[in-house]
Amino acid sequence: MEQVFAQVTELLKISKATKQRDLRVRTYNVVPLNASTGAIEFCQPSVPLNDFLIGAHERYYPKDLKWHSARRAIADVVDHSQETRIMVFQDVMNKFHPVMRHFFYERFLDPDEWFARRLAYTRSTAAISILGHVLGLGDRHCQNILIDTRTGEVIHIDLGVAFEAGRILNVPETVPFRLTRDIVDGFGIAGTEGVFRRCCEFTLEALRAHKDAIMTLLNVLRYDPLYSWSLSPLRAKRMQDEQDREIAGTGTSSVGPSTAARSVRGTRSSTGAVGLGVEPEKNEEDEADEAVRALRGVEKKLATSLSVTATVNELIQQASDVRQLALLFAGKCHKSSIETQTNVI
Image 1 (cartoon, rainbow, N blue to C red):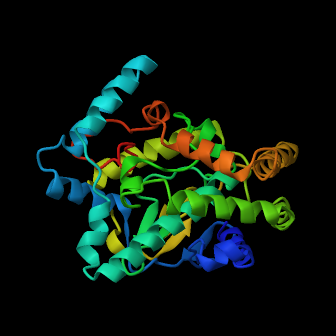
Image 2: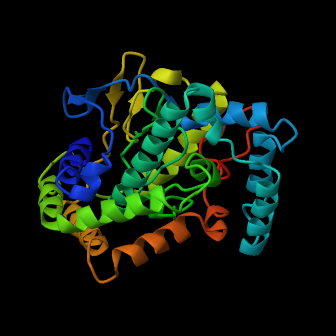
């Protein structure tokens, strides 16, 4: 997937509009050692969005609803009707203000630098949002999105849930990309209008223009014996259960500013190596069918049946729709844990 990201970045350099705005997708190095183990690059200097946001909410809005109380309120109604869950979610939002803009206020005191870093954040978020939508990238919680503390660019890690595999999780992911209020708060006063929307349009237009190159690149994965195109129900359940256990056990991020990219199929060791925990072998015909389905999905998203402007508008509406965000995974309620997938930040 990192190779796909790198090649797409090269394609974005060809289009005049995306090149002028330096639209790109940040990558990191991955070195496979054998069929089930590899080494990954630490993304320095960076910090997970979650690590900043949790503390910032406490600092700037001490009278707001506490994050664990907000998450507990959402988790308590997970078995209730959709209307009740939406109502509770809206009530929580009214008591929980976004704070992402303060990341740039705190770190970049010079006005010119502040503007440049916020612009880089907005542009990089737009580029990865559209590419993530095209590739069906899921598991985009705030611990899997890092932000470079020097440039302001976002770096997405943990890329094991792709090609719409997130839709078959115990709690399905129904949004095309992460666009919660805190993410939008970092864009500035214009929000999703202006820079973000235009960069989304330019990125999608460039991807459509290079549809054949992208499909050729993805077709190579069909012949990779190590790539699994499907996500088994057992693995899907284990993913979200392990997130809860890990977070409940640590109470905070275990890596901090030097967070390493990691595979969702693996477990991270103190050495930086990743054990992929290889799944049992699947029927080759089933895998082939899954590959065809996944690639058809990508091809459909790159089709020109709907204009770029209309497509981007629809995606932004879906990603920020309260009715969708209220139904996303909020984790089990551990009083002392930090839930990385809380959908209010």
